[in-house]
Image: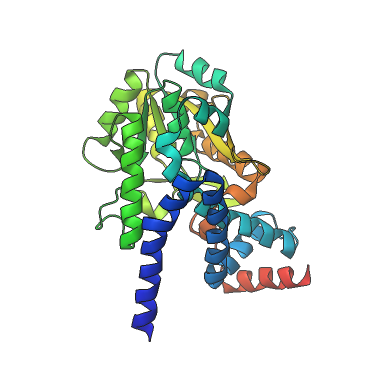
Length: 325
């Protein structure tokens, strides 16, 4: 029975990634996003333990002050944000000209141009928030040369279900065509030099820094989401090596229409501003997360960042708070 259940799950995933999502995207973007939200609800319903952990982590990040219904609402939005972002990958090739302008508004471009005017390129960074990959498309269509630092999709480096891997490979291939260059694979020989060369040429290097620290070779201590934490140190090391500007961004999904806003913030202080570069980066992404926590993907995995412990006693205490709220 268990084997049959696993087969049915794999078959449903194959049908979703290979037929339903791309088919709906060709038929109607609105319908595709509607399906994306339904997928998020199914994911939230099926991941009982994951949902419970996400709620506990969220309440902990807010000091236990969130009521249970508000925490559940945010977590529901977080699952939907993930699945809608997946659905939007099927639109990327068609996002150009007027279609892109209707789908993606851009605020703060002057901050990026000012950072690039320093002549050392710019590291644009965010968290796993909103439709973060849409920023690659938007920046490339605006004429910026975008180089993406990404995790390998090779099975030995990144175990994924077959359907998910094929989806991810197709998504990366689409983005690489739009960017007119391959992704830079973190930790692979030559990756640091590729980033140095791109920044020296006045280009952009795109990084997501909300990567679970166990996936990073080097980590740095910060305070993140209300607690002592670790984040990958790579962005600080790249900034130290290149003196490139550090420019935070976030892509906010509109609540009342089909579209997004890419918000580019002012550059933050890098190594030239003294110690604490990674903390300044963490503070920058946390401001966007707290502005709209339902668009942050990583609530289920927030414990992997925190270093002050969150044992079963803590979990039970927050569960008790949730039931009492």
